Every structure is written in structure tokens, then in C-alpha cells.
Length: 173
Image 1: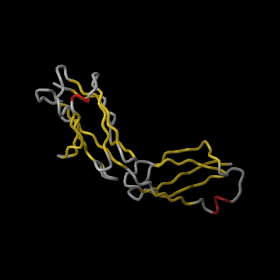
Image 2: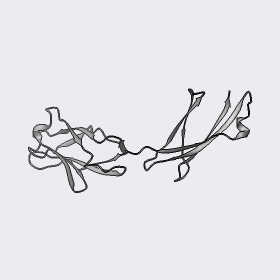
Image 3: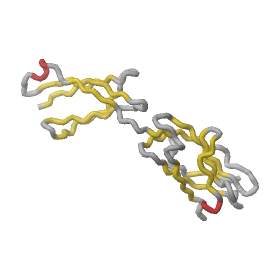
Image 4: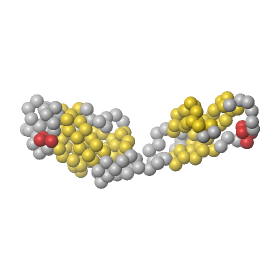
């Protein structure tokens, strides 16, 4: 039976922020791949791309570019890939999820309170804000002091659906 391997979008939801998505993989059969539809890529019942056996390299490598028309913006889209051999046997359907994320997150930051901003030799600050995006997974905060990036960076976990976060910085001189 034919097989599919080394697909470049494996593992969880694959996010990208361009109008095209290049898919690559490896299709193999010990006899021969199908002449007209060796690799079939679908979204639901809609065929997005069909790769003929002649377009699959001798080592099994194949590549195809999906366009903006294939994947909607800011939605997780399930796609399937199936490999066929010359007598119609299939590799089985392999499923993947992609998301064309074309919208930047909206971020707000609240400054430290007046009490925290009173000059001290060593001071603690609490920063807070929100980060919202249809595909928000996490927030990375980098601290700048006098317009220079410091070595203080942290991953923040937004609380709940509003994307609220808080970061306490200690002993900032």
C-alpha cells in the first residue's frame, strides 16, 4: 500500500501569516503511484490540489502551494492528504489543521502606578494589560528601560477570554 510521510505541517495547528502555504511531503509505493492523482489534498469534500505521479520525485518528495483562495483567513481549517497507487489503493487519509492568521493581536499596557514610580534605589513594578486575537495562544513580554531592551523577558498566560495579563518586575534599578 502507498504511504505518506514527512509532511511539513505535522503537529497541532500550523499557523502562517502569508497568502500562500507551501506543503511538502513524501509519497511512496513499492510499485507505482497513481498517474493522475498520486497525492490528493482536500478541505472537507473540496479538492484543493491533485499531484500527478509524474510530479512526485523519484525519492518520493512532492511540493504544492495552496493559495489564499484555498484557506480562509483567521479560521482553523482541516485539510487532508491521501496518497494513491496505480491500482487505487490508498495510504489512508492523514488530517492536519492550518490557520492563515493575517490579523495582528491588539495589545494594551497599563503603566505602573504612581506609588511604584516614585524614585527608589530598588523598585518593584506591576505591569498589566490585555492581548486579544482570534488565535491568541500566549503573550511574550520584553522589558525595555530607557528605550533599551533588557534581559528580562517572560511568557505570560492571559487570564480568561479577555486576554488580561499581569507581570511583576522586581528590583528594577
